[in-house]
Amino acid sequence: MATDTKDRFIDVSADLLRRQGYASTGVQQIVHAAKAPLGSLYHHFPGGKEELGAAAIRRSGALYELLIPEIFDPAPDLVSAVRLFFEGAAAHLEESEYQDACPIATVALEVSSTSDTMREACADVFNSWIAAGLPRFTAEGLDEATSRELVIGMIAALEGAFVLARATQTTEALHVAGELCAQATERALDARSAPAGG
Amino acid sequence: MATDTKDRFIDVSADLLRRQGYASTGVQQIVHAAKAPLGSLYHHFPGGKEELGAAAIRRSGALYELLIPEIFDPAPDLVSAVRLFFEGAAAHLEESEYQDACPIATVALEVSSTSDTMREACADVFNSWIAAGLPRFTAEGLDEATSRELVIGMIAALEGAFVLARATQTTEALHVAGELCAQATERALDARSAPAGG
DNA sequence: CCGCTCCTAGATAGATCGTTCTAGCGAGTA
DNA sequence: TACTCGCTAGAACGATCTATCTAGGAGCGG
Image 1 (cartoon, rainbow over the protein chains, first blue to last red):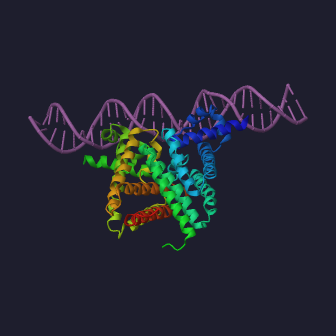
Image 2: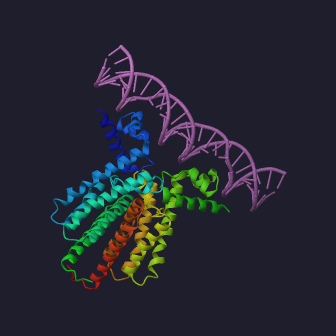
């Protein structure tokens, strides 16, 4: 079928971009991994590598967003969910031999001074993650501003911990960042029921 | 003089790597920016682009490390210092039109699956930042483990906030991450004098 | 059968990649 | 002057890059 090939391009690109980044991933490598001819790539993506890259970033973002309900729904409480999120990330990173960290962070840093199309795709993904995480915190009675801070803080801490973890080949930063966010969440929840703190 | 050229190679490489990453920065671009011939590059760096890149990462790391005393020394207290660190980063990022974030994060993510030489250089820089930040926290009476967690958490939050900030072209993540770390530090200092908390 | 469309197929182009090559300059020394 | 050494200088190489090109197969309405 037709859409198969196009989807396969996006999928293999998403994988390659996560590991190598944008500049290091060649279209030849993509067509080889997708087992498809080069002509098909430019048929489905007239905008070339940049259009395909943006599509791959958006797909990666959408898939990664699914982890939020997957982890938060079965968790006993919000603080546990935050901890589980980081522990899951640490486990996955270790299993993949420090290859599978955030699917878009590398590209986000790489292209933000180079390609506005790609940069916007990354920004959209981050914003959709924030929007997806927000209700998990407001549902616990936290106000909008506090919830937003916790979500953004969590994503930032996770991304940064990935940077340290990949470079040092250790999961220490992920555990530390997880604890930092879990305790911040705990404190926010406490302040909610006892708004007298200073 | 001779060392001038070599230093210039390292300096311009550090700048280019910070903005574009490793793969997008060509040696031609480096020699052009350094106003030096290609032969000189391979004379000073027989290991080629990789050796020069590692040297640039290490220099960037050493220069960035200088910000720690520069900000922490004049600060009235530790919590203020943490806040000032993030506010300074936000201001610098905004002034450079979201170009000058962390000098090594982009490369760290990019090369960690590709070049072990470069990955190690990044890991060394991160570890030296941790070592440099540690005494600022232990000097306040915090134990070694807690201090290490705070420093790593701070670096991770900063790095991650840079990722979000560059992609979204906003400093919000930096402010949020700064507040997160400042409050975590505050709480740790409180727990120090009153070790009875839950 | 034709004619049209969607997609596959990969050869090819032109630019750029990192690296190696030889040549030569300028200062120091005998 | 003759020779060496550290460095400059950039042409040239083969590989690889992204993108374009032409050609053809498969399905479908007529």
